[in-house]
Image (cartoon, rainbow, N blue to C red; front, side, top):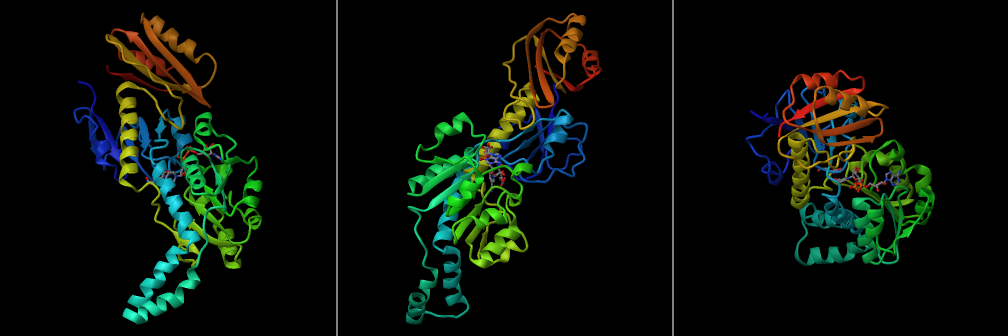
Length: 397
Ligand SMILES: NC(=O)C1=CN([C@@H]2O[C@H](COP(=O)(O)OP(=O)(O)OC[C@H]3O[C@@H](n4cnc5c(N)ncnc54)[C@H](O)[C@@H]3O)[C@@H](O)[C@H]2O)C=CC1
Ligand SMILES: O=C(O)CCC(=O)C(=O)O
């Protein structure tokens, strides 16, 4: 009997994704103590005691800073994410954020509500007060203003192109932009080669980078001070990318007009010039469906066939299945003679290799190998005995 894989969900995942799982082969639950896989969104796994049973983690979303990616790599556990699947949802919220800030919409709507709910005005009195009070919310328009986009990945490129189409001058900064993203970028977006230049020239800054060591506190007091007075910072990346204390001080001094973000903190959320949303970037039915479908498909392809696609800690390795073969998936340290030792074990067991892929990424590598016929259970133990092999799995056909 082939194994039924237990998948533990740690957040609500769209049924459109979950329903793709064949219930003969997958058992879904929220409480397993020995899951084969974890499927999650923003749940924090950093203090999670990783059980030996765990084969994989799938993040239905882009950011993986809630997951101990390196630690899992060292245990031979791939972490998958869903690049681009929620990018349009975030782009739309960023565009809303630009308009919220430029037209003071949040405070203006609060003001109107207050006139009716608190001051109990109605009819002509309400009309009069509306016309008298509205000037305090007069805003400015976007065409001709400069938007600096930091991070030109799936989201940043969509934001840059949309802002450009609304008449903004757009500057982009991403020292590691991929060729694919560069092709998608509107030719009118100007590439800048230093963050300092981007800050100095931008009326709005929007962040679309992962939270990693290099991006922690990227929006600093010094950089904010170099922006034109009355600028706006939008943060739909992660809270830690911004030095919030510096942002709040700049809002108080008038250097910044507004800070629009998706990551509530006790101090920031109640500041009058801060608009904080409850991590809403990817919360559309479309994005939730897209992410769930992609995460589930990648996870089931790995559990059933050992294929790795869109992993953030292991290389892309995928092979079609062939009849009358047995597949082995092997995680190992990226060091000399691993392939030689693995193939020697296979040869000594009299096995004929029909297909073999080995790819490395950083300190680790993954080998997928198909051999003719059946494989004895002891073979896995022999492979595991090789110095540098972290994990090995016989994958049923
Ligand atoms: N608010 C929300 O609900 C959501 C937030 N996010 C956040 O947005 C981030 C970006 O998402 P995607 O665009 O899908 O990811 P992506 O991986 O497609 O793009 C990230 C880009 O940032 C660039 N980058 C990395 N370090 C950089 C640096 N120091 N300076 C400039 N650029 C740098 C990379 O080269 C890459 O092009 C995610 O990591 C996540 O933290 C993503 C989706 C939803
Ligand atoms: O799943 C969510 O709602 C958050 C999405 C997100 O932050 C991401 O994809 O990085």
